Image (cartoon, rainbow, N blue to C red; front, side):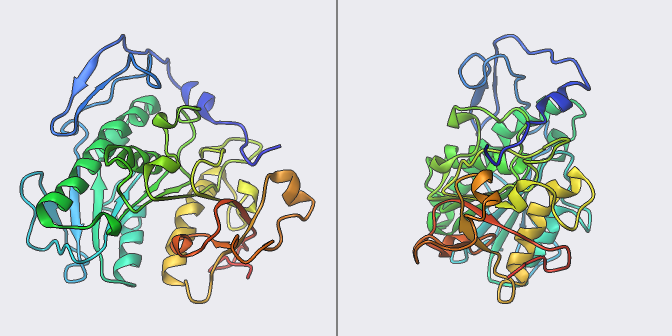
Length: 334
């Protein structure tokens, strides 16, 4: 038995009729052209252009943590400092970055409160807000490619470094980070999926989802993949390090699968702001059976330990990891 529970794709598609577009192609310069007659996207809906999706790249800096400056394709603002690491933050389905308590703003605030970063919030609300989920899911192809083009532009035109590039995405945003990494030919230092979306991405072809080939280090937190009712996240381990808090099932602070899904983002935020007192120590684990039999309670060797969240890239462990969390903030058991 694996950590991955039943995929929730059917639950989404039951709400509407899947009317797959016939084989076509759509071009969205400067991000590229996209079709639905090549694997792994055969008979899926064509994505919308970045203009239709309302794509914006919003730059926040330590000097301006609450007011953003737009980055345009051919106009990199002086506020962008290439000597700083750059963090791309990408929201998911129905995400809106401009509201005070939404995911991008919370993670942006955590980052700017803890370090010296360029934080670029990737805003694509129109593209992410379709009631017809499959359209928003396929829109991630364009947004990821455009984010990759923007990262490449920052490197080529502003002398930014690939070693400082990190994409952090929640749900559909996690899958978008995968497409961003693919567009950059895995030159990006890191891609992090926070319960990366499962519906329409539970495919074997790595070109159709986030995977370890998308960046130098790819990590994922799977917080809603093992629920008896519905799962919004991708169940299978697909990165260099995949974390399953509470076996990817019910998260202690939660009473709904929606909350479980969102806890991956909260764990990431807390790992940034509480990293010194809450390390989210995680242990190698093959599968759920091993976890149930007590086989995932310690590090076998000094080189296979991990810590879930922002500092996972500082640890040597690679593979699948298990840990327990608790209901009270900051949620760490150890």
